[in-house]
Image 1 (cartoon, rainbow, N blue to C red):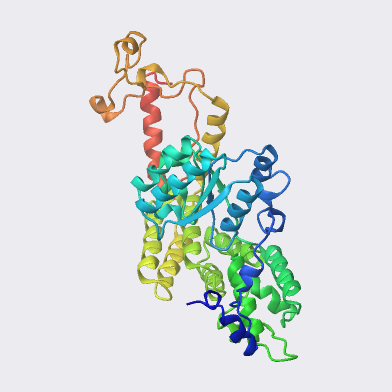
Image 2 (image 1 turned 120 degrees about the vertical axis):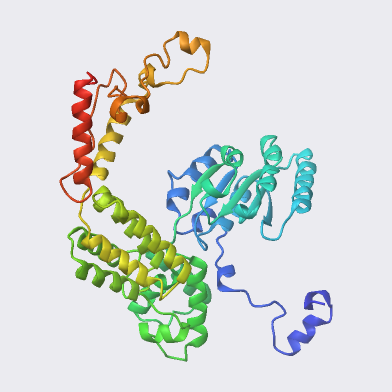
Length: 444
């Protein structure tokens, strides 16, 4: 039985000099009471933010909040319900099943008959299977509930297309250093005492929290518990207290971007030694190796491209190896990929061609492809000339028809211009050969 359930308990607690209420975590004490108190999501809650505009019109549709932990998704959902005078209901996909959903839906329907709407907040909504996600569709469509789902996973991959088509996805961002500092200042105001940290250690809290406001406040609680009267911690002292290392550069600020830029340019400049140095600097600072693996994949397609088609395969294999081995063993696979890229022939021809093609595609708008390369599954389409005159390349001499594939109004364009380096030297020979055949066949 809880102290509150026992009438005599409060007196026993009082006699012992104890508070009958259990101590509240700092994150709970600092939970915003208004949307204006939410930090780090100004792109959503600022004057021109998506949620601010919805509230201004007093119309709230179903939403999916996508973002990392500790960024305020649950809090914002609760405050949205308050602002729009909807009854707030919360369930977690981790602990709820079909029976729980049916109960919530039935309650919402009964509530709606009395004129009261329901905002249903579903935490970890991506953990519901496809059938469970589909069960939301009827109650979303008839207005029984306004669904607000929260997920840390990419909704495009984890949620049904039908559900996504009925909800707007809003992205919550990791808290930057300024947002975390606001939380620290608010914690000091509520607790009525200063954090026993010097300026560098205070900034390190934001780096240790890695954009998670809840984690930042947990660190603050650990610091206050550990500090002796008059004691102030520097970075080393902070690390000893919380048993966590502060990165030697700020992952969300200049140090992060400077080092990743230096790594990328060292690879592009074919200097494997410098590239390894910056890779190790970032790993030593506590950078997420998977972030580095993703950037290495980007380097493969941007700076090596088809000059060495194996570069992308090597980098993806390095990412998979890290996933399989973890740290520190898997970091060697990323280092190997960095060396491979730095010593590979370089080409940005594919990168440049993609950008040029995208620019033309945006300008061209809705130009139709030439009719001879379109399918003609109906008699009407055949009568309109769809598919007429198409030459099947495999039936042609040299396996090449030389026909035009660009919209007639656009004319032929050239985006890809491979250099005489690496494997692209062979690609260039093929393209020149096909250009010669195309000219002979009258395709240009």
